[in-house]
Length: 265
Image (tube, rainbow, N blue to C red; front, side):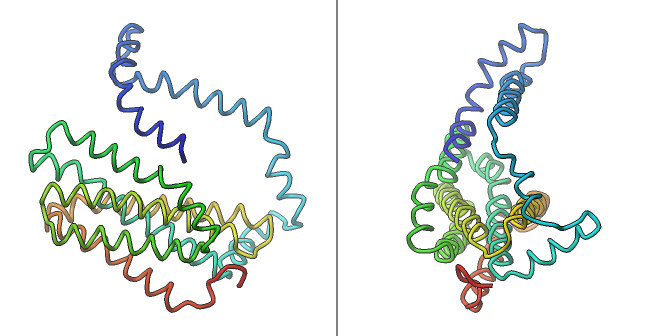
C-alpha cells in the first residue's frame, strides 16, 4: 500500500522528465511513464519467478482434491460463508462509492475554478487512500475487521453527505475527497482482513480473493461509467447522494447480520 501511494503521487510528477526521455527516443511525450513501467514490471516478474517459494498455486493444489470438472464447486462453497459474502459486499461498495465521486471530482473542481490546484487536491486524496494503511491494519487486528468495515461505511456515507450539503463548493469537495480516501482505505483493509479471516479452506482463499478483485473491478466500472451521466443530469450533490446510498445499505447489512463475525460461518 505504501509503494502504491509513492507511485500514485510521484507518477504524475515524472511525466515531464520522462517525456523528455521519450522524445529523445522518437516517441510521443506521453509514453515516457511506460518507459519506466515496462522495466519495473519485468523486474517484479523476475523477482516473483526467482523468490516466490513455495508457489501458492502448488500449495493450493496440494491442499485440495477438487478436479477441473468440479470447478464451480469452490465458488459455491466460498459464497456459502457469511464472512466472505460480507467482505465481498464491503470491498465492492467501498470501491463503487469512491470511484463514482473521485472519477468526476477533477471535472467538478475545474468547472469551479480550481485551476492547477486540482493536481494537489487529487494527490491529497490519493495520500488519504493509502497512507492510513498501518493504522487501519492495526485497528483491524485489535478491534476486529467488522468494526473497521463499519467505520469505512460511516466515513464514505459522511463524504456523500458533505458533498450533498456543500454542493459545488470547492472546500466541501476537498473534504469529500479526503473522507473518500480514508473511507476507501478502511473498507479495503477491513474487507480484506474479513476475507482473510473467513473460516474457509486454504485452497478456497484464492477463489475468495479473486472474487474480491472481480467485485471491486466491476463496482469501479459501474461507478466510473455512470458518474458522468449522474453529474451531467443532476450535479455533484446528486452524485454524492446516489453514491452514499450503498453505504447506508451496507451499514444496515452489518448491523442486522450477527452471523458475519470473525471465526463464524
